[in-house]
Image (cartoon, rainbow, N blue to C red; front, top):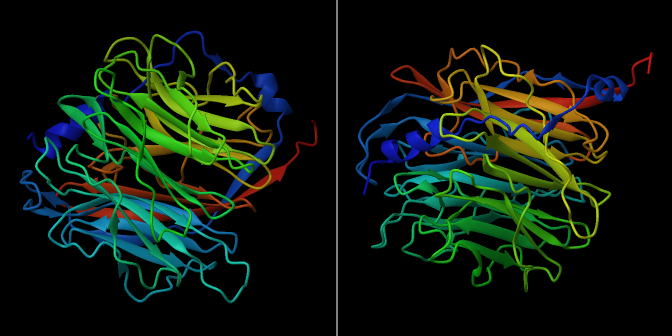
Length: 463
């Protein structure tokens, strides 16, 4: 088995995109006619700090000393849940913050409790209690590097908390495979870990999807609050086809489930899509969203209050050395036909040689916020984060802006060293947003930070 360092870095260096020429960019008139949406940023919270050393990959015996892999959720009480990884402990940690940004627990809560096995790249869901005195439920999905005799290690684990994250259930294994669950294969020699997703429907049903190094895409659900999950259902990636990679799941108010993913082993990969109208009992035959000549990667889905389905992803022009841009599309009809793809990441510059790995969230007023990783060098790792906002359901977007406190490279590179298929953005119904990020500067420091903000909307007096 190749070392993790060699498995992740080539994929990350490929994750740099240029958009195909048939894409459109929002016009100046569109932006002038749009309502102005601002973000009022609050003080940044330093969730955790650590050393920054990493020895050679020796599976679970590797000597790694850094923190990484954050994910975030925010509920309608403006409480924020953050989960991340401490590689020294080889465990997954959780902290909840109150509406004022103060940590609830004196010390982070150990969720995985598996100190002999690496735990990586969590996904989080946190509920909004109806009673102000009640505590939120917290659900976590992550990857443990369990070696079960297959070509690659990896299993998908899940744990739940019904007391606001103070305690968690014993983790359960959803995948039970030897095929390397949680890996999103790009080529035989490069992949990203973190290839999975977790969402909660309005009726409380939990849906999980994940891929394996060997290529399969699996889907499972829980109708009892995470006490148990269904046997996995196979959606894509069977032998003889391209491996599925980077799934994203969204659930409409009517219970319809949507799944999008890309594929590996294909320099002209496209975004694939399917849906279920019977809450996961069956799925439509999958189809390609946009058949194009570039390489599409890292899709993210979201659905708004009008049942419009929104999609963002990264796309690179032909050739492995091209640059990536962030693409947006939406589908409002019953057949879910997606609109013409549009660039939202703006023009390249000295500080942005490429952009990829977007995040998408939608608030209660159907305002869209998209974030993405930015690269000063398309062949390197990301060193910044940018974002754009739409106040009109995706008709137009604000000009891209850097996330305050990112982009100068002073803290080293951004994102997980295990892969950039992450979930770092959350928005609640009232437009309060939370974003988490990890940074790493070799032999100096590793950090996990929490960025908080509030969306505010003002109409231009001249409009």
